[in-house]
Image (cartoon, rainbow, N blue to C red; front, side, top):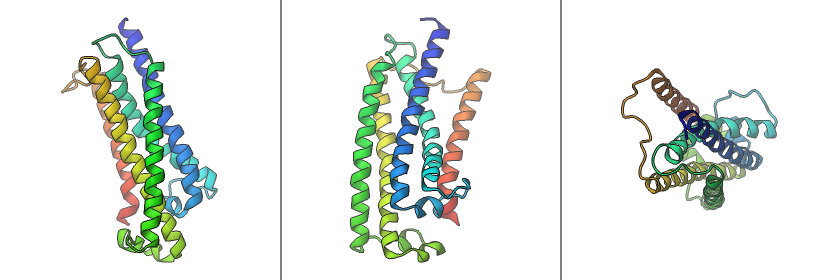
Length: 214
């Protein structure tokens, strides 16, 4: 397989990673936004001027997962297509990715139910976890649902990243540990790629922490 074909295959794997992450994020947020819209409208930066739960869940479902999907998709492409043993067919990656997503969804459900139960029993308290002034405007039931959604989202990030990371490592070892990234970028393309990855990371981190700092 020549260099051009390798890059095309890598691009397809990256697109697959982004697509899987975004689809999961949209479905996940369409559910959680209906459980507690305040989690999105109050606890997130007001960067989307929409009030519809459907649109709010759609916007945040894309924004919160596209960057993560891009990074994980890139690493998956490097592990599955870089020189080493024969590259893996893209269709062979879909099944393992669906397993990761299924486990992540199950973990999110369990975490959400756990958070709801802990809040209702008074074991965890939203004002103590998130001491913002707007928390006091929420009813007790809204606070319970907020914590449930918060736990569900945290579990999705944790299990999604760990699961995808485990898949990448398994493929990497299976293919003889091909070189994922140069330790130091040498060409303009490598430098640009590193800068893009760093920019995506910074944007994701800032979006998640901006509201909590208010």
